[in-house]
Image (tube, rainbow, N blue to C red):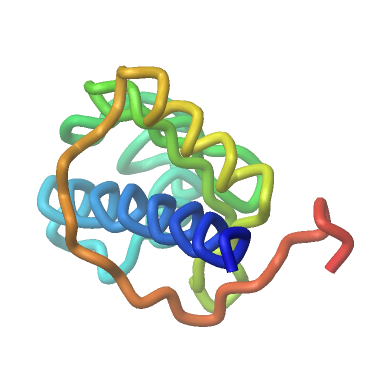
Length: 126
Protein backbone atom coordinates (compact mmCIF):
# COMPACT_ATOMS: atom_id res chain seq x y z
CA UNK A 1 0.00 0.00 0.00
CA UNK A 2 2.89 2.37 0.65
CA UNK A 3 3.98 2.08 -2.99
CA UNK A 4 0.48 2.87 -4.18
CA UNK A 5 0.41 5.98 -2.01
CA UNK A 6 3.82 7.09 -3.27
CA UNK A 7 2.82 6.51 -6.89
CA UNK A 8 -0.42 8.41 -6.36
CA UNK A 9 1.42 11.38 -4.86
CA UNK A 10 3.94 11.32 -7.72
CA UNK A 11 1.17 11.53 -10.32
CA UNK A 12 -0.86 14.09 -8.39
CA UNK A 13 2.19 16.32 -7.93
CA UNK A 14 2.83 16.25 -11.68
CA UNK A 15 -0.82 16.95 -12.50
CA UNK A 16 -0.85 19.83 -10.01
CA UNK A 17 2.21 21.36 -11.67
CA UNK A 18 0.74 20.77 -15.15
CA UNK A 19 -2.50 22.43 -14.06
CA UNK A 20 -0.56 25.49 -12.88
CA UNK A 21 1.21 25.70 -16.26
CA UNK A 22 -2.09 25.37 -18.12
CA UNK A 23 -3.77 28.11 -16.08
CA UNK A 24 -0.86 30.54 -16.40
CA UNK A 25 -0.37 29.98 -20.13
CA UNK A 26 -4.07 30.31 -20.91
CA UNK A 27 -4.30 33.46 -18.77
CA UNK A 28 -1.42 34.95 -20.76
CA UNK A 29 -2.75 33.81 -24.17
CA UNK A 30 -6.56 33.79 -23.77
CA UNK A 31 -7.12 32.50 -27.32
CA UNK A 32 -5.72 29.07 -26.33
CA UNK A 33 -8.40 26.46 -25.82
CA UNK A 34 -5.92 23.94 -24.39
CA UNK A 35 -2.26 23.76 -23.53
CA UNK A 36 -1.48 21.62 -26.59
CA UNK A 37 -2.36 24.62 -28.78
CA UNK A 38 1.06 26.07 -27.88
CA UNK A 39 2.52 23.68 -30.47
CA UNK A 40 0.32 25.15 -33.19
CA UNK A 41 1.34 28.68 -32.27
CA UNK A 42 5.00 27.72 -32.51
CA UNK A 43 4.60 25.82 -35.76
CA UNK A 44 2.80 28.75 -37.37
CA UNK A 45 5.91 30.91 -36.73
CA UNK A 46 3.59 33.87 -36.39
CA UNK A 47 2.76 34.00 -32.71
CA UNK A 48 5.56 32.60 -30.56
CA UNK A 49 9.01 31.09 -31.13
CA UNK A 50 10.25 27.59 -30.20
CA UNK A 51 11.51 28.92 -26.87
CA UNK A 52 10.81 31.96 -24.80
CA UNK A 53 8.52 33.11 -22.01
CA UNK A 54 4.80 32.83 -21.49
CA UNK A 55 3.70 34.50 -18.28
CA UNK A 56 5.70 33.16 -15.33
CA UNK A 57 7.09 30.23 -17.38
CA UNK A 58 9.97 29.86 -19.74
CA UNK A 59 9.25 27.21 -22.35
CA UNK A 60 11.02 25.12 -24.97
CA UNK A 61 9.07 23.22 -27.61
CA UNK A 62 10.45 19.81 -28.57
CA UNK A 63 9.01 17.25 -30.96
CA UNK A 64 5.48 16.50 -29.81
CA UNK A 65 5.65 18.48 -26.59
CA UNK A 66 7.00 21.25 -24.49
CA UNK A 67 9.07 21.81 -21.37
CA UNK A 68 7.96 24.59 -19.02
CA UNK A 69 10.02 26.01 -16.15
CA UNK A 70 8.35 28.31 -13.63
CA UNK A 71 9.96 31.28 -11.95
CA UNK A 72 10.23 29.17 -8.78
CA UNK A 73 12.07 26.38 -10.63
CA UNK A 74 9.32 23.80 -11.06
CA UNK A 75 9.90 21.99 -14.35
CA UNK A 76 7.11 20.28 -16.28
CA UNK A 77 7.76 18.36 -19.49
CA UNK A 78 4.73 17.14 -21.43
CA UNK A 79 4.00 15.61 -24.83
CA UNK A 80 0.68 15.97 -26.59
CA UNK A 81 -1.32 13.40 -28.54
CA UNK A 82 -2.73 14.36 -31.94
CA UNK A 83 -6.08 15.26 -30.37
CA UNK A 84 -4.38 17.40 -27.71
CA UNK A 85 -4.46 15.21 -24.62
CA UNK A 86 -1.44 15.30 -22.35
CA UNK A 87 1.00 12.39 -22.39
CA UNK A 88 3.47 11.77 -19.62
CA UNK A 89 5.61 8.92 -18.40
CA UNK A 90 7.56 7.93 -15.32
CA UNK A 91 10.60 9.97 -16.40
CA UNK A 92 8.51 13.13 -16.60
CA UNK A 93 6.88 12.43 -13.24
CA UNK A 94 10.24 12.00 -11.55
CA UNK A 95 11.73 15.01 -13.34
CA UNK A 96 8.96 17.28 -12.04
CA UNK A 97 9.18 15.83 -8.53
CA UNK A 98 12.93 16.44 -8.42
CA UNK A 99 12.51 20.06 -9.47
CA UNK A 100 9.88 20.58 -6.78
CA UNK A 101 11.92 18.85 -4.07
CA UNK A 102 15.09 20.75 -4.85
CA UNK A 103 13.62 23.64 -2.91
CA UNK A 104 13.14 25.68 -6.04
CA UNK A 105 9.58 24.77 -6.85
CA UNK A 106 6.66 24.23 -4.55
CA UNK A 107 3.81 26.37 -5.66
CA UNK A 108 1.61 25.58 -2.69
CA UNK A 109 -1.40 24.96 -4.90
CA UNK A 110 -3.67 22.15 -3.89
CA UNK A 111 -6.01 22.13 -6.88
CA UNK A 112 -6.12 18.92 -8.86
CA UNK A 113 -6.79 18.49 -12.53
CA UNK A 114 -8.52 15.76 -14.42
CA UNK A 115 -6.19 14.49 -17.12
CA UNK A 116 -7.99 13.14 -20.16
CA UNK A 117 -6.52 10.40 -22.29
CA UNK A 118 -3.35 10.07 -20.28
CA UNK A 119 -1.14 7.24 -21.41
CA UNK A 120 2.47 6.23 -21.25
CA UNK A 121 4.70 7.45 -24.03
CA UNK A 122 6.99 5.20 -26.03
CA UNK A 123 9.80 5.90 -23.58
CA UNK A 124 8.06 3.48 -21.21
CA UNK A 125 7.42 0.98 -23.96
CA UNK A 126 3.71 1.62 -24.20
